[in-house]
Amino acid sequence: MSRDGVADRSHLARRYGTPLYVYDAARIHRAADRLRAALPSPHRLYYSVKANPSPAVLRQLTGLGLPAEVSSAGELAVALDAGQPAGQVLYTGPGKTPTEVTEAIAAGVRLFSVESAEDHRRLAAAAAEHGTTVEYLIRVNGLPSRPAGGLRMTGRPSQFGIDLDALWSVPGLFTGTPAARPVGLHFFPVTNMTDEAALAAEFTASAQTAAAVLHRSGLDATVLDLGGGFAAPFARPGESPGYQRLAATLAETLDTRLAGWRAGRPVVAFEAGRYLVAECGTLLSTVLDVKRSGGRTFVVLDAGINNLGGVSATGRLLPPSAQPTGPDAPDAEPVTLVGPLCTPLDVLGRDARLPDPRVGDVVAIPNVGAYGLTASVLGFLSRPPPTEVLVDATDRVVAVTTWSVRAVEQPGPAGGAAP
Image 1 (cartoon, rainbow, N blue to C red):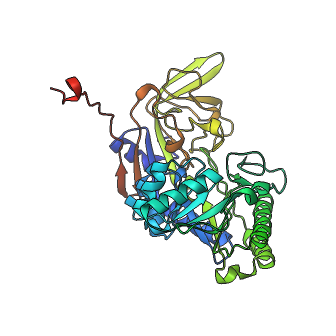
Image 2: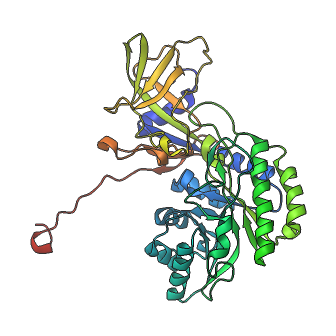
Image 3: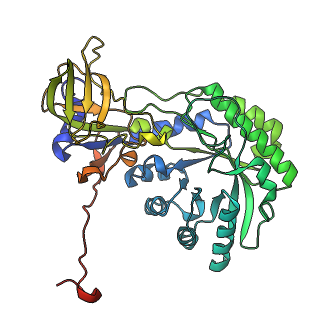
C-alpha cells in the first residue's frame, strides 16, 4: 500500500495514474545473470517474447544479447523494433499461417521450428517461393521423464511437436529440400517447474531422446533446443528458484550423450520467459472501495482480470491469488481483492493479507512482469489498458508504453471515402 511498503513507487501512480505496470530494468539484468549461471556453458538462451512483449522490456533483453523466440507476426514485429537481428530470431508455434511464414522469411528470419508434416511442407514452399534457404529445428514430442508439476506441453498426446514414432513417416523431414534445411531438434516438454530435480530430469530425458534420434536419422545437428520450464512466482512476494545443481547435472548428461556440445556441435539452446521478467514487474492499483458482505471484506481495485491473470485457464499461470507487498501483517484479516468488472469472476485474490485498507490507497502487486498484462482479457468491458513504464536502478523512468484506442473507419457509399 502507499504507506509503508510501496511509498517509493506511489509517485509513479500519481504521475501516470493506475492501473500501472512498472518494470524494473535492474531486475531483468539480475534474472538474466542468475539464469545464465544456472545453465551449462556454452549455451544459447532465447527470450520467449510471449511472456512479456513490452518493447521496453524486450530492448533490455536484446541489449543483453538474448535472441528472441517468437510465435506470431506481432511478436516478430516487436522483436525487430527492439533491435533484434532477424537472422537470430527463432520462429516457433504449431499453427503458422502461410502469410506469416512468408512475411517472416521476407523480414529475414532464417530459423524455424517445424511441428508437423504440413508445417514442414508449408515452410519449404514459402522459402522456395521467396528464392532463399531457411533452416529448421524438428520439434519432438518425446516421452515424459516422470510425473511433474508445471504445465506439461509434450510427453502425451499434444498439438505440439511430432510424436517419436511418427518422425520417420514424414517425407523429407531429416533430409530437407534445397530451400529448407534441417539443422537440429527442438524440445519443450514442460513450463513453470519449481522442482529442480524434476526439471533436470526433463532436460536429461530430452537430451537422451535427442541423442537417439540423431543417431538413427544421421542428422548432423548444429542446434539442440532443450526448451525451458524455469519457474517464477506470480502476483505475490517471493523469488524464483536458484537451480543451483542444474548446470552440473545437465553437463554430465550432455558429455555422455552429445560429446561435441562443449565445442558448439551442437549448440545447446534454452528458452526462458517468466524467469527472466516475472520479478521485474509490479502492478500498481488504487483502492476504489472497501465493503463488507457475508462476513468478508472486499477491497475493490481499479485493476481486475482485464489487467492481470485473466487467461489463467490457459495454464500459463496460476489462478489469481494476488498478495500485495507491504508491511508484514500475518494476523491481518484476510480480504478478497476484486476488480471493477461486472462479473463475479473478477477476483484477484481471496485471502490477501492487507491491513487496514482504505479508499485511495495504492496497492502494489509484485512479480507480474511475466504473463501479467499480456495474459489478461484486455478487451472485456472495453476499459482502457494500463500504461507501462520501465525504470532504471535509480527508479528513473526511461520508457513509457501506452496503448492506442481503437479507431473505426466508416466507409462511404459503394466503397468510397466517408464524408
